Image (cartoon, rainbow, N blue to C red; front, side, top):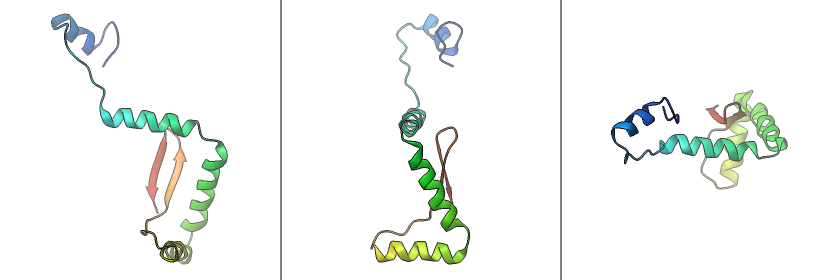
Length: 93
């Protein structure tokens, strides 16, 4: 832990004052993405939920989604559930 007074980092600094602490890059990226997503208007989150809800329900709609991607000549991807809880959570359909 990295608290100021009673943490692992503060105790290590008592032993070695020149210690350098670096945050985990994955954690920093998650924090940055979470903050960026919290700045987006709610309409974008609702749109992504609506698109997901439409295409997830049947195999026919999933096939339509794949056809749309093929017609647009883009790499075919699964559609993801984008829900903002503790940051964006990606769940493949």
